[in-house]
Image (cartoon, rainbow, N blue to C red; front, side, top):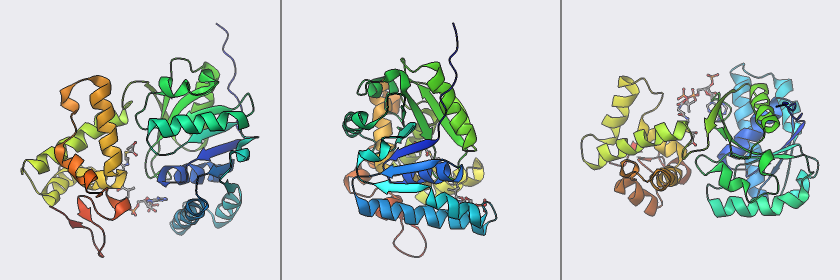
Length: 297
Ligand code: CAA
């Protein structure tokens, strides 16, 4: 079988200006790509630009990025609420809310604006790439590109091929990951891929450990930080990822693999019901409203 060559990417589109979308725009702009970023809300886009500026400033202060590279990179990012922005992009990465119906709706609206050769990736952390691809007109040019949070710091990208994804698309996304300074790892399209299939059951088990009173928030996090050398304990990490995202990934594992070992801990469900979603809502397993995070249990 002849192997077609990878498609060259010069401009990147990013849909969704939240934590992940802004991180993706940040690393693409620093790597020299022109970036078009869209969101429903202009205020969210402006806040994302501010966050990118702030995070790049932090990299300049630590000597990781030169001031002039930061200045040029920021100018490479354009923002807008309309998909016309993507008329000339070679590659669009969707990083919207982790809900399948929202992503499907985005793809339907996006397709009429894309040139025929444009590739589309989803940064989904757990939804089937094969299934998402069916809401586009180009399943062969559709792929999963899963970045880790915080994107500028974490060097892994999971690259997930759907059943229909062709080889040039897969190779282009691997090449792009390398150009962004990341290490791509191929994962098959099964619930949670690799990282979340392993990481989220660990976090869920930490929440069961709390629920059953085996240890306090502080004891559990200190135990895993010092006892397993994790950079942050599992409950602090859950707050960092977002408890709603953790719950939705556990639900995908539970339903997609039909195995009771993935059942979400009822305490996780309760925190989400309370709107205590972690750092983004200022409260989760820790309360972030004061100067220092305080355990909530
Ligand atoms: N942008 C740019 N740089 C950042 C940053 C950001 N948003 N956040 C942190 N940094 C940089 C800092 O400037 C610092 O740089 P230097 O090494 O050059 O000094 C470095 O990262 C470390 O930061 P800090 O000193 O502020 O704090 P820390 O040492 O406590 O590290 C952390 C913070 C990087 C978040 C670290 O605690 C960590 O690695 N935690 C685990 C993160 C993790 O597991 N992420 C994966 C989550 S799972 C996921 O994302 C998949 C999913 O689908 C749910």
